[in-house]
Length: 223
Image 1: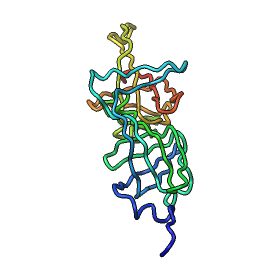
Image 2: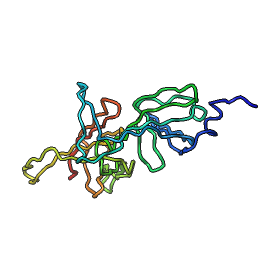
Image 3: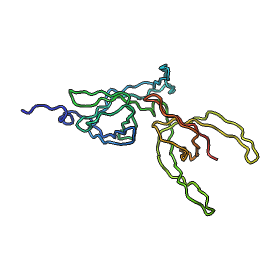
Image 4: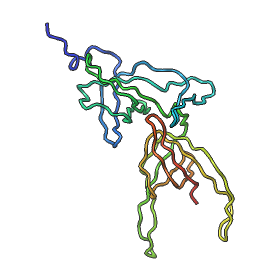
């Protein structure tokens, strides 16, 4: 009889595996074939403020699955997942890791993770365009907008409208706050395109201050 080796035999004795992708905060990816999801929490989402005051996320009374534990084999993933890394499942759902523990007995990482898109009601998708500048016939630099990222889960929320009136333009300017499920490296060469085709100019962006929460983009409709 051979001795049981948890690290080597983990994938042979447990059922219900699925293949996932671990996305590191820097963008590197790693495929994990023998991943398990366990201990799903069914409840309305809960978020915390910078002062650690926690409140329910309004969801119209519906129950949503926002938290669960992923178990990843150390044999496939020798380097520990880090806080803020993400696990993308086979359906494209993204789970942000908020806690990592090593289970030495069965040689696996236990990663508590949160589906931010569900927790915060991100029911839209956006694309990010980046400008590449070329010279036009007059020799002036002109932007050509190219797709950089697509299918990013988001919520676009209007925050302010104002009247624009000057010598050349008159109309209504609207400001928006765009919440996104993943941290995007945005700069002045970027624009946001909503699922309805609306283009937004990025005014500023702030990264998530706490793990498991959202990056926020301040934007205006492009003119």
